[in-house]
Image 1: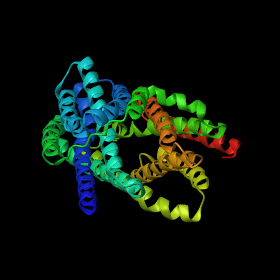
Image 2 (image 1 turned 180 degrees about the horizontal axis):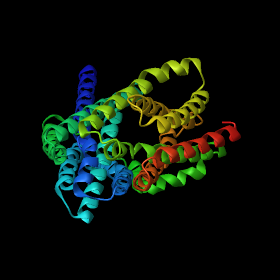
Image 3 (image 1 turned 180 degrees about the vertical axis):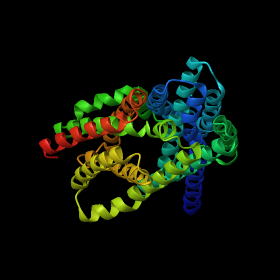
Image 4 (image 1 turned 120 degrees about the vertical axis):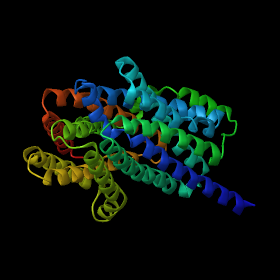
Length: 397
């Protein structure tokens, strides 16, 4: 009987990994076509960062609400609507012309994306044995990276071959509808058992901004490191959020080229976090790797800035830079969590919230920087990350 239960749990976990893979393919179809859509609409370039900031904020707000709601009413009941809602909002984004409606659509996309991740990780965590939980969550994360890379390539290719960026957004609606049907057909429902203590706790934690109150419970070192995570998020995403738009508006590349580039960068980043980081950790301390990669990222960005008009080299360097900052983000969570034997979930929640805030600020900055000067996102990235490195060295991290 126990073996049958374990087999069923494993089967349902594998189903969720596949479903997340499909969801993330759909969610990434529109990204490489978005710069071409903005160009088609004749919108100001700064709107790219504003739209992304709206979506990032909505993701941050929706995750705890939809995750807690799924715990109470059933995970399938929430999860089944997420791809359809995302696809519908992207259809509005792709074909709508009214800006307030466009911003609303981006917020809905953010809510759906945040809900997708919250439910998926919660579902896998609930079904996993304690000793296999981290491994299974890592499998979901890997599926999202690979799915995202494939989605970027398909979306970019579809927009280029039809000579219409709106094609990618139509595909998101079709794909989202299909994935929702698949979820309805194959996903098994699970609902948390009634627990009044847990229910009261979840009500208190529903407010996404409440996560920040835990900062006061951290020691001085961890508070400092939260500042580092915040600044790193601003620096990384002031460049990262502008990259696709820089390639489209100033390098004049096609949506397919953008999709191919992002796919290769994502796969390289996956290689870095899944394989290279493990080998580095066997030889060096986390903090040493962290400082070196921030320094290496600054050097890479400086080389990219000065060689951006010289052939293929900058694209290779941009891909390597993507890998370095993904490792930095992963290491940051590890470093801060290692200081606490208990409540690691809470501590990582704080780190995630601070990182999300940095992402939203960096994304908002990116569009305005790009609109003012195409190279400013590169320059601001170097300045902010250099400041981060100085803080770390002064504090003797």
